[in-house]
Structure formats: structure tokens, C-alpha cells
Image (cartoon, rainbow, N blue to C red; front, side, top):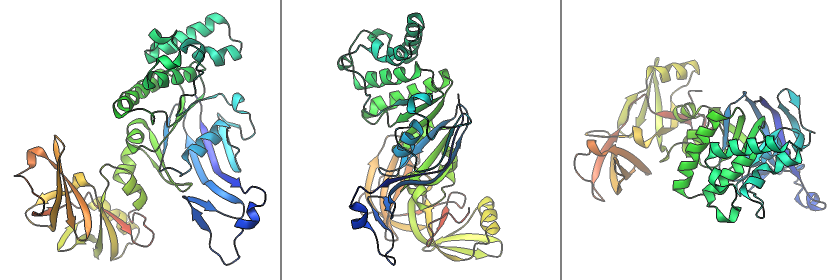
Length: 392
């Protein structure tokens, strides 16, 4: 029930006493990186130049590899980490120096953080008791949240008597009884097995429809990001790489990192050539040449992109078996039920081709030769120098 604005947020962990002198670099020495984090004279930079406007009731997902700064960003919103510079505004109010308890936010942690000696009911009611809410109000809110999360039958149990999925529901219930303006969730499903994760993802989607609050969700799992988020924020080394709807970042990755991070299996990448002939553009890989779609040509023309060597990206599901095209040799064939994943070698790269079972014309054995092709509307061309998508 609130807008959230992060304006040029930066987080620096300063060196401890005596460490700065040891770490201080020489004037002509380039900045070093260690474990994805930038090291400067100020200290270790975990997040920088983070700008994001979150609309009321929007579900935002921060996603990226371990160490990219997503959890640090969430903790700054929660008030658990001090903001080194920039402005955090919740519901129109600057809250940089506001205590966590006064920000009207609730947070669900990865490890549940339940009180083991309390019942489920008491865990969920605890924050309301601290507020000195009337007993009837507390009871009403706890039972309503338990009904939403289907844990009414567990209210008198202790956490140790619950499964991982049930404990996570309790942790979520404890957060929603407070009716917070902003709900923060830090990898809440990472401790669950695959089946429970799928079930809890569906529960969170249902929950989002039933409570009026703004969600900021952190995960390293791109499947969670793609299924849960209205928009997703892809991070790397403390920087935002791209912000967009799941479909936007899938269809139009801003750079090589986003292209490789979003989508499963990962996008196939090739050393190729982008050829401009007047107002037309062609992608050439080995002897296979395909004209790009009019939409892609228009964007490349707008940027006045010239003929050049590029990294060509094609998703496995957009890579087709063909009578003619790029020659490849089969390494592995995986039957996946409705489709077959062919792992092949082509042009010095490992390539995955997803073929619907209904389209398979025989079986492929290790060492067999085949040909694949792709259409001009599904290829992505990235600069070899900057790694950016040349369309944008």
C-alpha cells in the first residue's frame, strides 16, 4: 500500500581499522575486484547507482547471482543496513534515518526466524502484542491470516512440529498480520525442496491477490523471478543490468549477462557477423545467412549500426532442426517428455536445441551429424566490445 523510491542508492562497507592502509591502492593501480565486489579507497562497494521507482501494490523481484547486492539492497529498505549515500523514500517520506520499526514494513527471512518456544498462534501474534493491540483484534487478524495461508489447523503447534513449507507459511503469516505498507521477502523458498518451492510460488501468487501491499522479493532463482514479478530487476556486481517485465527481459535482453542469466536452458551464443546492406541487416553464422526481422532492422538502423563481428544469441527453443543450415555433431540427447534436448557441438561452441517430441523425425545418436537454423525475428546481436545488445 505504498510507493517505494530508491534514488542513487549506494552501499559501501568501510575498511576496519588498519585495513584501509593495507588495502590502499597506488595512484596508477586499477581498481580491483574480489568475489564480485568492487574495492575502492572508501571500502568494499556492495551496491551502487541503484535507481528504482516501485508503484503502489507492485510486485518487484530483485534477481542475480550470489554476491550481486540484491539482499543488501533489501536490507537497506528494511533499515537493517545503513545507506551509504542516496535517498530511500517510502510513501513519499524520506526514511534513510527512520528506525526499522517505524518504517511500516515486514520482512520474511530465508531461515523462517520463528520463536521455537512459542506456538504458531503466538509467533503470528507477537508483533501485534508488542503494539498493544486489543486481544480481539489480534485474534481476528491471526485467524484471518491463518485462513489465507491454510495453517489454521497448526495454530497450537510449535515450529518443530511443522514441515519446512508450513514454517514458511507461518513466517509469511507473521508478516501479513501487521498489514504492512511494504512486504520484503529475502529468498523465502530457497530452503525448500523443488516440489514445495513450486507449491509455495503458487501460494505467494494467490497471497498477493488477497492482500493490498507492495512486494519486494529477492531470489537467485530466475524461475521464481519470471513467475512472480510484475517487473524484475537483474543485478550483477552491485549494478542494475536491466529492469523490465519478465517478457521484456526474455525477449529483449539488454546485454550478454542478462541474455545468459534469463532463460533455461541458457541462450546459445556464437561468434558471428552482422552484415548491413543498405537498410537491411543479416546475421551470418558459418555458411548460414538470415535476414533480421523488420522490427530488429528498424532498431539497428536507428542506432546506425554498421557491419561488424558480433556475439549472436539464439535461445534453444528458437533453434530448429533443418535440412540445410549450420552443421553440428550430436554430443548428448535428453528425452524430456514433451521435448528432446539435443546437446551438439557447432562452430566451436556447445549448443542446445529443443525439439518438440512430435517434430522428431527419428532418433539421434552420439556422433551423428545434423543441421540447424533459426529465423531472423528471434536472434539477438551483441557487441563484442561492450557486450550490449546493439538494438538498444
